Every structure is written in structure tokens, then in C-alpha cells.
Image (tube, rainbow, N blue to C red):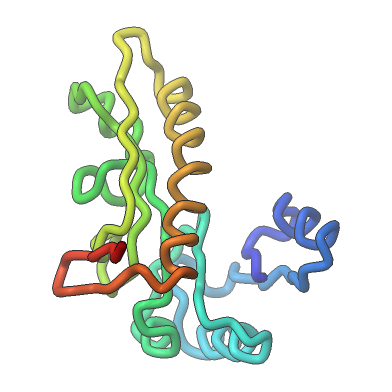
Length: 170
């Protein structure tokens, strides 16, 4: 397990469960994972025997080399009902737009920004008195349901990609 935040809680949680985890200094990469840094990330993941890359809070553009190393095995979660509101602060974008429904999307990562084939989506109603913080908090509750659901489907071999569509078998 890799984290790009030195004091990420997931590093502590992984250690408690005996999962090998390390911090990878991404500061030199800025917002792009590329070149030698990308090679290092791929090397670490492959040496650890990873066959799937699960991103969470990874605010960088994944470049083709990583996608090629793990074809159709890089997943991300995004706090919006994609394709609406890709990028950052999507819950604020939904509020500013006047949406009545927001949500969360788990998707396969492609070379675009939050544009890969959709695996799972969960809707979250937008309340009249919502603030960006209250809406984001409710979206995060659904994130904790949607991501494990998508990962269970992937682990069970029930997902296949046909063009832009993810089919769920059984």
C-alpha cells in the first residue's frame, strides 16, 4: 500500500493489520505521476505483487504508463455522479449548480480526468439547508459503501468492460 501523504491515517491502519505500507514522496511530481517517479511507483507495486491499484484521495493525473502496467485494474472513487462535476470540490460544484441529487462514483481510471467507465454509483439527496461540508459528509458515507461494493465485484471476477460500459455478471 502506498500513500502520498506522509501522515495519512491509512498508513497507521495498515500497520495495525500487518499490511506492508509506505509513504511515497510525491512532492516532486506536482500534479502529474510521470517519468522516474511513475517508474518507482510501478516498481513498488509490482514488487509487492499488486494486480489492482485502488486510488483514494490521490489528487494526481494518472499517466498511461501506470495504466498500461495495470490494464483495467486501476480504480478511483469520485464524490459526484460522473460524468457531472469531474475534478476537485465536486460537492460544491453540485450545490452551486442547484442540483437536487449529488453522489459518488467508483470508476475504472483512464487517461482522462474522472472519465473512465463507471462501476458503481450511489445517489445522495441535496437538502435545502446543505452546506458544502454537510453535503460532502453525506457523500463520504456513501463512498464507504460504494468502494467496497465495487472491489467485491472486481475480486469476484464479475466486472467486464465493453466500451464505456461496465457489465456486472450474475
